[in-house]
Length: 307
Image (cartoon, rainbow, N blue to C red; front, top):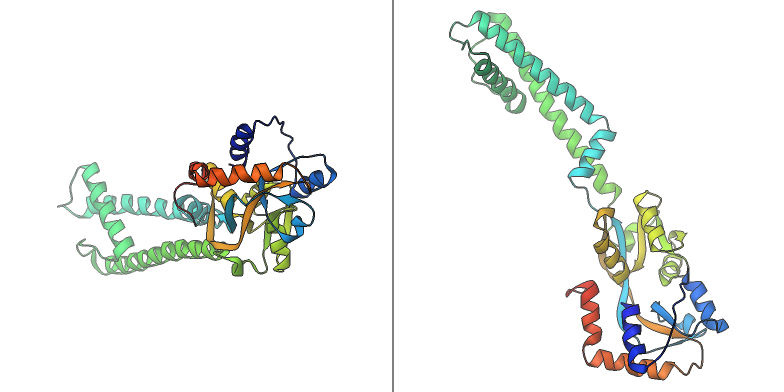
């Protein structure tokens, strides 16, 4: 958005320009101070500290910070948790036991129950229904089984079914609870004692340090997002529109932006102190704001809803 906005303004002013990519915010400010750069075209947050080192145009975006975290547990994450806990292997063993029980019950019924169907497919289906019914609900309409020994077997079978249901329920619940607690970050207050990722030289870094958070500095947002996906950090603190655009543009990353907007700030273009470009550029930005082009650009990148 910053580049599109700059190109519209520069075209209206008849300016010729060339881009130079700068790795960090610190290097960007240093480039302005040294005169190596004429304009810093990026989401430069207007701060008192930076204003001592450079000039700004009129702000062109009202922003703030939010948090980017891994998405809440869904089906894929639940399966991952069950797999890591060894539960899927146990589920497979239990499924095998149910199949073996189905076959055994079918064989017993075919041998001792004259009324039991002679068709294997029908017999297996009926036995499977009885086995699963006991495993899931503890009830079955199967007739009394083969005297006192059958009663004891039925009781043991019933206890095993209750234990099966209890195990499946508790394992799923425990994994979902662990996932929820492990990533229960909805605001800055949830970051205490956790490592957060920030872009080096950004206002997010200053905010995190001033707040007393443990930070892991990254060269850029791509690196910070990668650290988040790898589990090196619990969250990424950054400019809300930048994080929102990243999460929107990279759905495969499994990341989302959460929490309310905090530490509100404004973006402006940066220039060296005393630059003759400041006034005409500011006039252009004000004009684009008044004629609605600025809002059209904002909507193109971030949609109609603002946080």
